[in-house]
Image 1: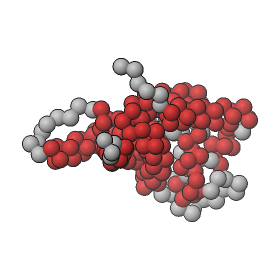
Image 2: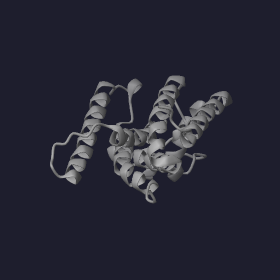
Image 3: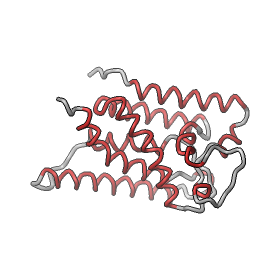
Image 4: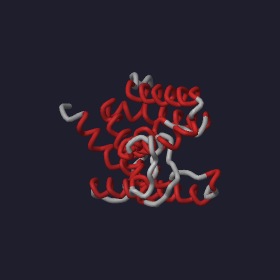
Length: 209
């Protein structure tokens, strides 16, 4: 089956790759990864970084910063796959809403995990987790465990959420050393938003059908 053009997904991927390339070529990658990152301690008012991006905007600027080509490449791969299929279902506006909302939900998830944490969070994986959550709900196989269709849908959402949270906790434990740290809270926050918004966005897009 040939899918229609994925405008939003393509734009997001191009902008993300271009931003990484520009930062890398500027020779200021290390500074950018601090000044543009989301840092929970900044959101709590415990850390002041002169010259940094305003704290309320860092969930967005953090999306454009990556630790290296492998970090960028993996995120672009997930963005291209999940975003393309989700865009077929909810349209380019739906993808944009999921991505931006997912970015802020990811920041909130990371903040709740450690409000005083001074570690910078960078990368688009939190926002992409929102697309992954929507993809899992829209295209995943639903098991008819209950006779009531609505309750069965709720159980399916809870099952997906529990499975993702469990997976992230296991990965977080396995990579708990400083060199392999991942943003568990961000991935969970983004995924939950994807689960919550997928169906409303689908219904909104096809409201006139």
